[in-house]
Image: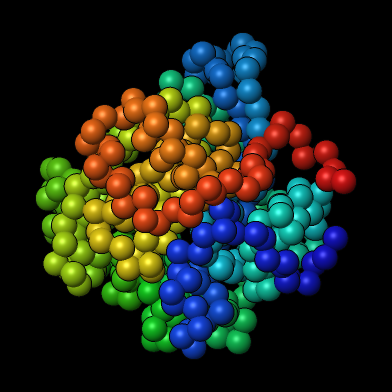
Length: 369
């Protein structure tokens, strides 16, 4: 197994490169750079209820795949974006599996990443039931990956997760180089919910919190009010509403949009938020109208929850094309959905259909031939 960090390019799903018109403009080699922790995810699905203390529960389904920041990295790459990841990988079997999956199978550039001798890979066990999930994680702090100017590749965009009181020097450096910074945020354990503590928010091109987070930070009562308040702080504000879809304001273009989610049978919601951000990032870099970006992000998230796991549930263009072909031929989504997604007609290549994507499997022990 190679540990040099280089990755052979994976074929772009359905032959579609959403940024093809930007290639050759002297821009950076990478489209998106991101950094974070890679977990090994073990996912149990098909549970009838939450685990009960003192009993043993059997699930009807199980999958394993790289998780954590790997969810978004894989989702970006499967949508045709050249993606570079800085992360620490354990030198155990789990680390081997995650490295091979991301570098060799997905074509993600791991040049800024490294193997950490003697450090075991973090693990998350996720249990999906009743449309939600419960997670248990274990891990130890890893030696941080280098995201210095020398190690971090230039990219059209980058992604960071904001946290109160934390400032990442590389985020400011990327911003000053002209990279568009996309960010989400986690739960504020301090309870302050003060946007002034999000130091890197000043460098963000787009901020994508969920409704609960957005309402806490803006002291508002509804997502629509929260997104308007956030639009005073960042050029593009997006608030996700779960089953309610997403609402956004793009102050650069003057657009606003509120797009409902698609109605699908969810198997596992793990990583759906990451896939949403990846879809929105792809559409933003490609220059699509705001409503189309939100609709596409909703679609990619909806396709992802129909499969096990976070990273390997991410859809590619083949699956997007298959969904569009199905709804146009078989219906079932209604005229409003057909109108909303009509922009896919001109975007998708005719006769798209390459091989199926890799999916999470119950074991990491199978070796490819």
